Image (cartoon, one colour):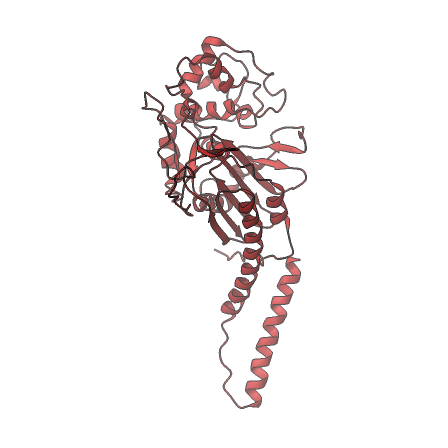
Length: 397
């Protein structure tokens, strides 16, 4: 299909040039110079407009079904479509419209950034993937768990949220990464399995990785992320929400685009939660345009060389559970090779980030309600090849 599109463009170009030259000669007119780049750019714009129309049909349909959020779609290195649907705070009578630059909580999609931080430290020689986690967290009462096991969700460790729900005495006080580690050491809950025994998706893995980042780097997790990822990539609207210095849990998080729980009687603004004090597995805020910048950085190997960055997209388990596998902060599917993705849900927010490395496509969808948008329209749109932009030309350096 891509080759056919290129041949059509090439044929059209030849016809235009030949026509101008032939008729110019017959009429003894000066043949004008032709801006070849402009010709191809205009044709690309037409294709992009058609693709944007496809996207708008999909996401307008989802909006009518209940989606409230912001979407960005890019193809062949250019943003084709971005749009905001709905409201920042649905509980207000005077509602403020969502904006493209509004930051949303990424929920579990935060994990790809935590993994990137670990990979940066690996590149600097400050840790190895096969290090025992107790090298950095000696209080952890479990043997044989490595950093790689945490990254690939193969640690067999228990869930920290269940532990906190049972033993944290005051929900008005934030529950932090350090509090989680202390509780694990004191209560020693039974693990779910043995290290590297099987794949089991568990938020504790990436919460512990955030602590590894802190202890290997000597910086607070939120500071490391800002200095080493957000600022270098000009992700100016991205940050890690921190309750490090809070003694009490605020009623709501200080954000513009509030999360909402949906009930039969209507939406209710989601209150802050004591578990929001735990970082690494969730609680990063970002915008669709900042996520696009991160995607471009991955493509261009800005943070890490390709040989190291590629580790993130390798399956971490020998078995493919329900046809899916997990790398370093990214999911992958046998059904869709070359596509790497993550979906997220946490306390009033849902999100989806998808990279298609075969067709050079990218989608970020951030929402601030618990509306469970169906994934099938996203996959169908991303896999649709009826309209494709020509492959972006890679110019020699």
